[in-house]
Image 1 (cartoon, rainbow, N blue to C red):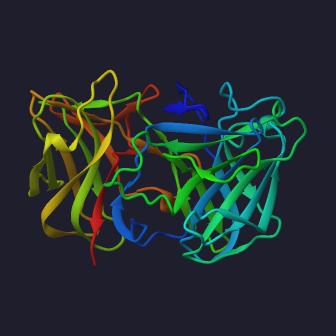
Image 2 (cartoon, one colour):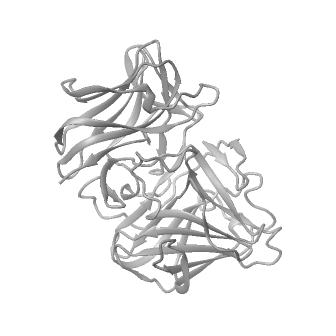
Image 3 (tube, rainbow, N blue to C red):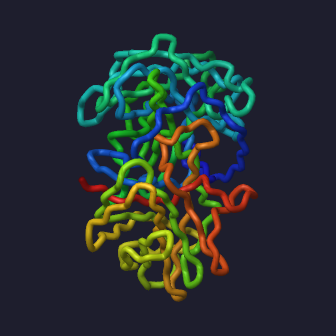
Amino acid sequence: MRCVSSKVLICFVVLLFGQLGWSSLSLAQTSAVSTSGGLAFYGSGIGSDGLANTTLGPNENTISYRFRAKHSGILEQALIYLIPDHAGYAGGNGGEILVTLNTDDATAAHNPTSHVIASYVMSNVLSLASPARYFYTLRFASPPTLVAGQIYHMVFRNIGSSPAVNYLSVDSLYELNFPSSMTAFNKTDAAVLLSEGGSAWKPRVGFIPIYQLKFQSGVTEGIGYMEGWVGAVRPISGTNAVREAFTVSGANVKVSSLAVRVARVNGNNPLEVRLENANGVLIEEGTIPATEIPLSSSSNPSYFWARFPLAATYTLLAGDTYHLDLEATSTSTYQVFPIRKGLAEGFQTATYFPDGYAEFEQSGSWHGWTQWGVANRTDSDLQFYFTVVP
């Protein structure tokens, strides 16, 4: 996991967390298809090069997590991600953080208004045991009612004494090359906004909030990817390949194109894409020209979204298992790393892609990802998505 501080410093942190209990499960999903900015997609749909923190206190920072509600109903609680143990991410007693749920101003900028519909105060966070101090639950005393399609803001402000000394950070996904024209993610639907010392709100470019909303009905929504495994890259070259293995849940999914986020670190041969059934029966294969993925290097890779238009519209059948394989000739090298979903930390299936996981090929056999000293992990996804059509 790569962490980026509020001053855009890069660091690597190893964090081991336990299980986080959730008072009730979300309702069963009828489909893993998601929507963002009017685009229906199937897959992770999010790019992330790691984590980024923004302090609440120093520089008089105030933060907004902007989101578009997908469900209507009474909001019971919200789950956010903190890393208070990392140097520079918290100080003193952690401060006292007022969290308000504000309406949107409906302008093109989509900033929060002063109209507060719910509030909660975070205090003594640093005294909490793991995992509550990392995966923090906000429980609103007067639960607000949200309306699907409306934009809201979760605003964080340090109201404690000496906030320059007693402070906390909120942590978000961070994508270095953002936005990319190929990403499924829409920055209007979910973004991190910053106000310094009462100044005008400004988007934090490349920052994507990590959050989960839980309604009284049991429905959940949000963004439940909690880190990018940039320290565990895998090459795509010759006999080394990667894939997303997935089994379609709910209804059939009709797809017309796909996009993947990769780095090209050597050579000029194309990236080879293969969509097949789990039994190896080919659905379609083709290539993405190397020119569509800027050349970088293995010591300093840059990841970009690249699109692969399918020759026909295909229906991925509910209950069937498929493989999306990425390959390249031995004279060129691409590389990828997956993003980890927070399924072990209380995030429900509606907040990430629940149907599959990333694998890599080694010595002719396929393995789940290796990270944090654990081999054959199945809790991560490639950064990819299919475009869904009616």
